[in-house]
Length: 309
Figure (tube, rainbow, N blue to C red):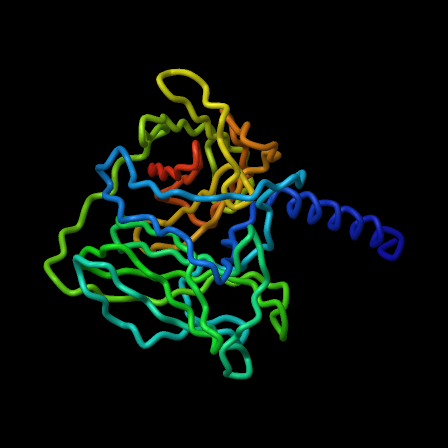
Protein backbone atom coordinates (compact mmCIF):
# COMPACT_ATOMS: atom_id res chain seq x y z
CA UNK A 1 0.00 0.00 0.00
CA UNK A 2 2.71 2.44 0.95
CA UNK A 3 4.71 1.61 -2.18
CA UNK A 4 1.73 2.42 -4.41
CA UNK A 5 0.95 5.78 -2.79
CA UNK A 6 4.47 7.10 -2.43
CA UNK A 7 4.83 8.33 -6.08
CA UNK A 8 1.53 10.26 -5.84
CA UNK A 9 2.63 11.90 -2.59
CA UNK A 10 5.92 12.82 -4.18
CA UNK A 11 4.17 14.34 -7.22
CA UNK A 12 1.89 16.42 -4.97
CA UNK A 13 4.89 17.64 -2.94
CA UNK A 14 6.74 18.63 -6.10
CA UNK A 15 3.67 20.47 -7.38
CA UNK A 16 3.36 22.45 -4.15
CA UNK A 17 7.06 23.28 -4.19
CA UNK A 18 6.84 24.42 -7.80
CA UNK A 19 3.90 26.69 -7.07
CA UNK A 20 5.69 28.26 -4.11
CA UNK A 21 8.82 28.83 -6.16
CA UNK A 22 6.82 30.49 -8.92
CA UNK A 23 5.23 32.91 -6.47
CA UNK A 24 8.29 33.71 -4.39
CA UNK A 25 9.70 37.18 -4.95
CA UNK A 26 13.39 37.62 -5.30
CA UNK A 27 14.81 39.19 -2.15
CA UNK A 28 18.28 39.59 -3.59
CA UNK A 29 19.51 42.91 -4.80
CA UNK A 30 20.97 43.09 -8.26
CA UNK A 31 24.64 43.75 -9.07
CA UNK A 32 26.53 46.81 -10.27
CA UNK A 33 29.05 47.53 -12.97
CA UNK A 34 32.42 49.18 -12.71
CA UNK A 35 30.81 52.36 -13.92
CA UNK A 36 29.90 54.68 -11.06
CA UNK A 37 26.27 55.59 -10.60
CA UNK A 38 24.57 58.44 -8.79
CA UNK A 39 24.05 57.95 -5.09
CA UNK A 40 20.80 58.76 -3.35
CA UNK A 41 21.32 61.47 -0.73
CA UNK A 42 20.11 60.76 2.79
CA UNK A 43 16.38 60.80 3.36
CA UNK A 44 14.74 61.90 6.58
CA UNK A 45 11.51 60.19 7.57
CA UNK A 46 9.59 63.42 7.52
CA UNK A 47 10.64 64.52 4.05
CA UNK A 48 7.99 64.35 1.34
CA UNK A 49 10.45 64.64 -1.50
CA UNK A 50 13.80 63.08 -2.19
CA UNK A 51 16.90 64.46 -3.77
CA UNK A 52 17.00 63.33 -7.36
CA UNK A 53 19.76 62.37 -9.73
CA UNK A 54 19.95 62.01 -13.46
CA UNK A 55 20.06 58.40 -14.57
CA UNK A 56 20.29 56.59 -17.87
CA UNK A 57 18.51 53.29 -18.18
CA UNK A 58 18.58 50.57 -20.79
CA UNK A 59 15.17 49.11 -21.67
CA UNK A 60 14.65 45.41 -21.13
CA UNK A 61 12.17 43.48 -23.21
CA UNK A 62 12.02 40.43 -20.98
CA UNK A 63 8.59 39.16 -19.97
CA UNK A 64 9.54 39.20 -16.28
CA UNK A 65 11.96 42.09 -15.77
CA UNK A 66 13.95 42.33 -12.60
CA UNK A 67 13.36 38.77 -11.42
CA UNK A 68 16.94 37.97 -10.45
CA UNK A 69 18.31 35.05 -8.47
CA UNK A 70 17.05 34.31 -4.97
CA UNK A 71 19.41 35.28 -2.16
CA UNK A 72 19.06 33.37 1.06
CA UNK A 73 18.96 35.23 4.36
CA UNK A 74 18.31 38.82 5.32
CA UNK A 75 21.72 40.34 4.69
CA UNK A 76 22.56 40.72 8.38
CA UNK A 77 25.89 38.90 8.17
CA UNK A 78 29.25 39.64 6.59
CA UNK A 79 29.87 36.05 5.48
CA UNK A 80 28.02 33.20 3.80
CA UNK A 81 29.08 29.99 2.06
CA UNK A 82 32.73 30.99 2.21
CA UNK A 83 32.22 34.52 0.85
CA UNK A 84 33.05 37.40 3.17
CA UNK A 85 32.54 41.16 2.99
CA UNK A 86 35.65 42.86 4.39
CA UNK A 87 36.48 46.49 5.05
CA UNK A 88 38.95 48.50 7.12
CA UNK A 89 36.39 51.30 7.40
CA UNK A 90 34.68 50.98 10.77
CA UNK A 91 33.97 54.69 11.23
CA UNK A 92 33.10 57.43 8.75
CA UNK A 93 32.97 61.18 9.29
CA UNK A 94 29.64 62.90 9.83
CA UNK A 95 28.32 65.79 7.79
CA UNK A 96 30.33 65.25 4.63
CA UNK A 97 30.72 62.89 1.74
CA UNK A 98 32.73 59.76 2.47
CA UNK A 99 34.32 56.94 0.52
CA UNK A 100 33.60 53.45 1.88
CA UNK A 101 36.05 50.84 0.60
CA UNK A 102 35.48 47.10 0.75
CA UNK A 103 36.27 43.78 -0.87
CA UNK A 104 34.41 40.53 -1.30
CA UNK A 105 36.69 37.62 -0.48
CA UNK A 106 35.92 34.19 -1.87
CA UNK A 107 36.25 30.75 -0.24
CA UNK A 108 39.96 30.81 -1.12
CA UNK A 109 40.42 33.98 0.92
CA UNK A 110 41.29 36.09 -2.12
CA UNK A 111 39.32 39.13 -3.35
CA UNK A 112 36.70 38.27 -5.94
CA UNK A 113 37.03 40.23 -9.19
CA UNK A 114 34.63 38.32 -11.45
CA UNK A 115 31.02 39.39 -10.89
CA UNK A 116 27.95 38.68 -13.00
CA UNK A 117 26.23 41.60 -14.69
CA UNK A 118 22.60 41.89 -13.66
CA UNK A 119 20.19 44.80 -14.18
CA UNK A 120 22.69 45.82 -15.69
CA UNK A 121 25.22 46.27 -12.87
CA UNK A 122 27.75 44.08 -11.06
CA UNK A 123 27.29 45.46 -7.56
CA UNK A 124 24.50 47.26 -5.75
CA UNK A 125 25.40 49.00 -2.51
CA UNK A 126 22.98 50.28 0.14
CA UNK A 127 23.51 52.37 3.26
CA UNK A 128 20.84 52.72 5.94
CA UNK A 129 20.97 54.20 9.44
CA UNK A 130 19.67 52.15 12.37
CA UNK A 131 16.47 54.24 12.58
CA UNK A 132 15.89 53.56 8.84
CA UNK A 133 16.73 57.10 7.74
CA UNK A 134 19.48 58.23 5.41
CA UNK A 135 18.82 55.60 2.72
CA UNK A 136 21.40 55.58 -0.05
CA UNK A 137 21.54 53.25 -3.06
CA UNK A 138 24.52 53.53 -5.34
CA UNK A 139 26.76 51.58 -7.67
CA UNK A 140 30.38 51.49 -6.52
CA UNK A 141 33.46 51.16 -8.71
CA UNK A 142 35.91 48.28 -8.54
CA UNK A 143 39.70 48.50 -8.87
CA UNK A 144 41.72 45.81 -10.59
CA UNK A 145 42.62 44.23 -7.23
CA UNK A 146 38.96 43.72 -6.28
CA UNK A 147 38.64 46.76 -4.00
CA UNK A 148 35.27 48.49 -4.36
CA UNK A 149 34.73 52.15 -3.53
CA UNK A 150 31.27 53.45 -2.65
CA UNK A 151 31.11 57.25 -2.69
CA UNK A 152 28.55 57.99 -0.01
CA UNK A 153 26.66 61.21 0.40
CA UNK A 154 26.49 63.06 3.72
CA UNK A 155 26.01 60.78 6.73
CA UNK A 156 24.28 61.75 9.98
CA UNK A 157 25.79 60.58 13.29
CA UNK A 158 24.73 57.12 14.42
CA UNK A 159 25.04 53.45 13.58
CA UNK A 160 24.85 52.55 9.88
CA UNK A 161 24.70 49.26 8.03
CA UNK A 162 26.36 48.89 4.64
CA UNK A 163 24.92 46.22 2.31
CA UNK A 164 26.67 44.76 -0.73
CA UNK A 165 24.61 42.71 -3.19
CA UNK A 166 26.37 40.68 -5.87
CA UNK A 167 26.54 37.43 -7.82
CA UNK A 168 29.93 35.79 -8.46
CA UNK A 169 30.50 34.86 -12.09
CA UNK A 170 33.06 32.16 -11.36
CA UNK A 171 34.22 29.95 -8.53
CA UNK A 172 32.19 27.95 -6.03
CA UNK A 173 29.46 30.61 -5.78
CA UNK A 174 28.98 31.19 -9.50
CA UNK A 175 25.38 32.17 -10.22
CA UNK A 176 24.46 32.51 -6.54
CA UNK A 177 23.12 35.87 -5.34
CA UNK A 178 24.57 37.15 -2.07
CA UNK A 179 23.64 40.04 0.20
CA UNK A 180 26.26 40.70 2.87
CA UNK A 181 26.65 43.64 5.24
CA UNK A 182 28.85 45.33 7.82
CA UNK A 183 28.16 48.07 10.36
CA UNK A 184 29.82 51.47 10.46
CA UNK A 185 29.82 54.09 13.19
CA UNK A 186 29.46 57.79 12.39
CA UNK A 187 30.61 59.76 15.46
CA UNK A 188 28.66 62.71 16.79
CA UNK A 189 25.45 63.54 18.60
CA UNK A 190 22.86 61.12 17.32
CA UNK A 191 19.27 62.23 16.94
CA UNK A 192 16.99 59.30 16.22
CA UNK A 193 13.90 59.87 14.11
CA UNK A 194 10.80 57.84 15.02
CA UNK A 195 9.58 55.57 12.26
CA UNK A 196 6.45 57.04 10.64
CA UNK A 197 3.26 55.06 11.12
CA UNK A 198 2.29 52.50 8.51
CA UNK A 199 0.62 54.17 5.53
CA UNK A 200 -0.60 53.25 2.09
CA UNK A 201 0.52 56.46 0.37
CA UNK A 202 3.65 58.57 0.07
CA UNK A 203 4.56 61.72 -1.83
CA UNK A 204 7.78 62.58 -3.62
CA UNK A 205 8.58 65.36 -6.10
CA UNK A 206 4.89 65.97 -6.80
CA UNK A 207 4.11 62.27 -7.34
CA UNK A 208 1.79 60.23 -5.14
CA UNK A 209 2.59 56.57 -4.54
CA UNK A 210 -0.25 54.29 -3.42
CA UNK A 211 0.29 50.73 -2.24
CA UNK A 212 -2.46 48.10 -2.38
CA UNK A 213 -2.15 44.69 -0.78
CA UNK A 214 -1.74 43.12 2.63
CA UNK A 215 1.54 41.17 2.65
CA UNK A 216 1.95 38.41 5.21
CA UNK A 217 5.32 37.28 6.52
CA UNK A 218 6.84 34.30 4.70
CA UNK A 219 3.95 34.18 2.23
CA UNK A 220 3.94 35.36 -1.38
CA UNK A 221 1.19 37.93 -1.78
CA UNK A 222 0.23 40.22 -4.69
CA UNK A 223 0.96 43.90 -4.15
CA UNK A 224 0.28 46.82 -6.47
CA UNK A 225 1.97 50.23 -6.51
CA UNK A 226 0.14 53.02 -8.35
CA UNK A 227 1.87 56.24 -9.40
CA UNK A 228 -0.16 59.42 -9.93
CA UNK A 229 0.57 63.14 -10.26
CA UNK A 230 -1.94 65.91 -9.65
CA UNK A 231 -4.58 63.21 -9.33
CA UNK A 232 -3.89 61.82 -12.80
CA UNK A 233 -2.35 58.41 -13.65
CA UNK A 234 1.32 58.51 -14.58
CA UNK A 235 2.09 56.59 -17.77
CA UNK A 236 5.56 57.82 -18.66
CA UNK A 237 7.74 55.84 -16.26
CA UNK A 238 11.09 55.10 -17.86
CA UNK A 239 13.09 51.89 -17.44
CA UNK A 240 15.41 52.09 -14.46
CA UNK A 241 17.89 49.25 -14.02
CA UNK A 242 15.94 47.23 -16.60
CA UNK A 243 12.60 47.59 -14.83
CA UNK A 244 10.05 50.32 -14.02
CA UNK A 245 10.81 50.53 -10.31
CA UNK A 246 13.41 49.51 -7.78
CA UNK A 247 12.00 48.71 -4.36
CA UNK A 248 14.18 48.08 -1.32
CA UNK A 249 12.84 47.29 2.15
CA UNK A 250 14.42 47.33 5.61
CA UNK A 251 12.91 45.83 8.77
CA UNK A 252 12.40 48.00 11.83
CA UNK A 253 14.67 47.09 14.71
CA UNK A 254 17.31 44.97 12.99
CA UNK A 255 17.53 46.60 9.51
CA UNK A 256 17.00 43.22 7.82
CA UNK A 257 17.12 43.62 4.04
CA UNK A 258 14.67 42.67 1.30
CA UNK A 259 14.56 43.55 -2.38
CA UNK A 260 11.41 43.49 -4.50
CA UNK A 261 11.03 43.88 -8.27
CA UNK A 262 7.86 44.52 -10.27
CA UNK A 263 6.67 41.79 -12.62
CA UNK A 264 5.28 44.38 -15.03
CA UNK A 265 6.68 43.98 -18.55
CA UNK A 266 8.95 46.80 -19.69
CA UNK A 267 7.80 48.54 -22.88
CA UNK A 268 9.85 51.67 -23.50
CA UNK A 269 9.07 54.93 -21.69
CA UNK A 270 5.45 53.96 -21.08
CA UNK A 271 5.44 52.49 -17.58
CA UNK A 272 2.66 53.04 -15.09
CA UNK A 273 0.39 53.86 -13.56
CA UNK A 274 0.28 50.41 -11.90
CA UNK A 275 3.24 48.20 -11.04
CA UNK A 276 2.59 44.65 -9.88
CA UNK A 277 4.71 42.81 -7.31
CA UNK A 278 4.69 39.37 -5.74
CA UNK A 279 5.67 40.51 -2.26
CA UNK A 280 7.22 38.04 0.12
CA UNK A 281 8.82 39.53 3.22
CA UNK A 282 10.45 37.12 5.67
CA UNK A 283 9.50 38.74 8.99
CA UNK A 284 6.40 40.34 10.44
CA UNK A 285 6.42 43.90 11.75
CA UNK A 286 7.15 47.26 10.18
CA UNK A 287 9.22 47.55 7.03
CA UNK A 288 10.46 50.82 5.57
CA UNK A 289 10.06 50.72 1.78
CA UNK A 290 12.07 52.86 -0.62
CA UNK A 291 10.61 52.95 -4.13
CA UNK A 292 12.80 54.40 -6.88
CA UNK A 293 11.46 55.26 -10.31
CA UNK A 294 12.50 57.36 -13.30
CA UNK A 295 10.62 60.05 -15.25
CA UNK A 296 12.09 62.52 -17.71
CA UNK A 297 15.59 61.32 -16.90
CA UNK A 298 15.12 62.18 -13.21
CA UNK A 299 15.29 59.61 -10.44
CA UNK A 300 12.73 59.84 -7.62
CA UNK A 301 12.77 58.00 -4.29
CA UNK A 302 9.58 57.62 -2.25
CA UNK A 303 9.55 56.15 1.27
CA UNK A 304 6.71 54.66 3.31
CA UNK A 305 6.18 52.28 6.20
CA UNK A 306 4.45 48.98 5.49
CA UNK A 307 3.15 46.73 8.27
CA UNK A 308 3.50 43.02 7.56
CA UNK A 309 1.35 40.61 9.56
